[in-house]
Every structure is written in structure tokens, then in C-alpha cells.
Amino acid sequence: MIRIDNVSRLFHSRDGGIVHALAEVDLEIRDHEFVSIVGPSGCGKSTLLRLVSGLLPPSSGSIAIDGRTVDGPREETGFVFQSPTLLPWATIEENLLFPLRMLRRPVTPAAQRTARELLALVGLTGFERRMPSELSGGMQQRAAICRALMHDPGILLMDEPFGALDALTREEMSLELLRLCAERPKTILFVTHSIAEAVLLSDRVVVMSPRPGRIQEIIDVPLERPRSFAMEGHHEFQDCAQRIRALIFGSRDRDELARAG
Ligand SMILES: Nc1ncnc2c1ncn2[C@@H]1O[C@H](COP(=O)(O)OP(=O)(O)OP(=O)(O)O)[C@@H](O)[C@H]1O
Image (cartoon, rainbow, N blue to C red; front, side, top):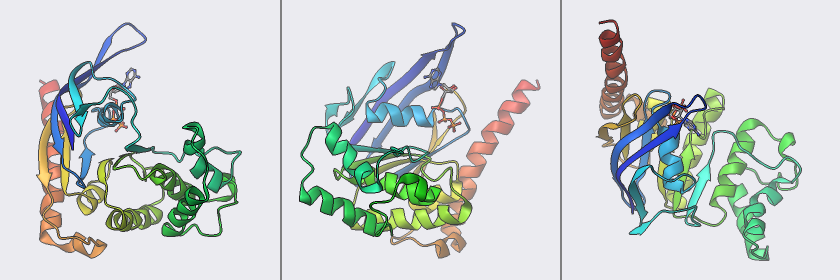
């Protein structure tokens, strides 16, 4: 469904230098697959997501969704950022309906029903008319995920969506995401710094090398679905987590040794 073909991305920094963020990335993501991207800070994970979303063009290479080259944002793609980015002056329900208004679509009773159903799915029934400031960080992030799902996109791009949450809320949100995926199957590309989260949620985990980010290895997660936290004790889970850790920290150790001469 998503085909990333030999994609590189450069940025021009303010001091006139060039930052080589991503180099020669090749990746194919199948329909309804959950793929996580992990790697050291600054290795181009967010850049890769922005390229797939069409918010940013590649410097070279190409990205296609269902055979059509991505050359701008598309309706079939939903994006969830690290912070909830809700409009502070609108109610939770209005926040969910806002993308429809932006697209100049009518806000129909069906759309309002969808908003309420999504909020119910993430345990936010009764908060439709509250303002974002009246909700906790975790509740706001759940509302932001609902907003991304409002137009039922086939693809969900999630950039460290639980990064700003406390550990307990983060676990709760992971379970909610698994539940949502079971109810409304989606193709998900998910950036995280948590190896355990990546293994728990994903079908495959893409491990990136330090900048310029390249795909170091892709790890298949051989755990059955539905997933649960009890699986963290399974040896398949621990094997995957250990391999990912060795790839990330192994390369960092090698780089440091090389720098030290
Ligand atoms: N708009 C930009 N202008 C200049 N440099 C940029 C821009 N966006 C990203 N970069 C650089 O590209 C590199 C990759 O950034 P990116 O945010 O994709 O990394 P990341 O892996 O998501 O990092 P983190 O894990 O810390 O969030 C970084 O060195 C960053 O400074």
C-alpha cells in the first residue's frame, strides 16, 4: 500500500550548512500492517513520517500510496502529533469536526454521530462539550487521535503520539490503540522511542541508523493478535526487544569507538 523508494532528504540549516536527514530509504508497508520506526534521536524518523504524509517532499526518490505518487497531503492519511494540538477555544466535539469545516464539508448529523462514537470508543463520553483545558493530557491526546480518525483514513501516521504522557497513561493508550485497530483496521506507521511499545504494537519494527537515517534492519514481531501486556513475558517479545536494543545501542557504541579513534 505504501511504497517508499530510495528516498533521501536534505535540509539547509540556518548557518548555510546541509543536514542529511535521511539516506536511501526503501520500505514497503502492506495494507493494515502496523509498522513502528525506532532509532536514535535525530535519525530522521519524524522526517520520514512527514514525507509519507505529503507535508514535505523528498529530495530524491519517491513515495507512492496505492500506486499514486505522494505529492501533497491526502485525505486517506491521518496524522497524530506528539502533542494533542487541539484548538483551545473550541469544545472537544468541535475540535473533532474542525477538519470537516476546513475541507468545507457540511457538518451532518452523521458526522456528529461519528464524533460521539469515536469519543465513546476512547472513553470520552460526557466530555463532548468540554474545552481542551478541562481535560488531562492523556484525555486530550485521545481526543486528538479521534480527530485523526474522523474521516476514517486508511492510513494513520503517528509521531510519538504517547511521548508526552506518563507511563501509566501511555500503557492505557497503547491498549486503546490496539482496540481501535481491531475495530477499524488501518495501516499504521508509528514513531516511538519505546522499544517495548514498538514490539507490543507492531507487526514489524524498522530500526534506523544514526543520521543520515538509513534502515538498519527490519524486525518481524512473531506475536499473535490480540496483543496484551502479558506478552512482554514471552520469549519472542524479549528476543525482539533485545535484537532492537542491540542494533540501536550497538551502532552507537561502534560510532563512539570510531570517534575515539
Ligand atoms: N525543517 C528543518 N530544517 C533543518 N533541519 C531539519 C528540519 N527538520 C529536521 N531537521 C534535521 O533533520 C534531522 C532529522 O530530524 P527528525 O526530526 O526527523 O529526527 P527524529 O529521528 O524524529 O528525532 P527525535 O527522535 O529526536 O524526534 C535532525 O538533524 C534535524 O535537526
